[in-house]
Amino acid sequence: MENTPTLLTNRLILRQFVREDLPALFSILSDPEVNTFLPWFTHQSMEETLSFLQTNFLETYSLPLGYRYAICLKEDHIPIGYINISPNESHDLGYGIHRNFWHQGIATEAGKCLLDHIQKVKTIPFITATHDRKNPNSGKVMQKLGMHYCYSYQEQWQPKNIPVIFRMYQMNLDGNVHKIYSQYWDQYPIHFVETNL
Image (cartoon, helix red, strand yellow):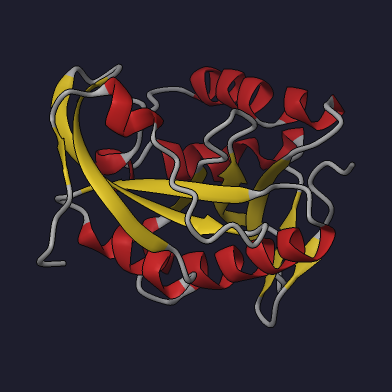
């Protein structure tokens, strides 16, 4: 078992967050444009981000298994984003990148590094990822990572309380190529398979 071991790519260091990363994380989470498609409201204060950092990252590092990373450039080790895999049964892959670093392949590079590592250590049998249908660029990242579209569903998304159609992607890492995570399909009555992606 392992929890967020440091990983390297050509440009990036993926590492655990530390308390000193608070200003960099606030810069990401306080940007309304960055947070348009993320499952929380734009942060209004450093105190709010500190609570988020503590709950979603720092406290999780004591668990026996986890992958919750700060994405940093090698040149300065300052977080420009984050990438993580949910510890629950969906093994949901999530990521966010500072707006100044969009369209540079950062999320794809970090994601490939993380998935390559997980495939080597064989700690997770599959991963899923979802994106708002209005945010197709996120879906392109999932495709570049080798994930496959499975189905779409409509959810009354919380805490923003808005109806969102999500596309669910999956990658099986245990050789079971036919397994599809069905919880979202089963949970939400509006679900369907799109054929024109």
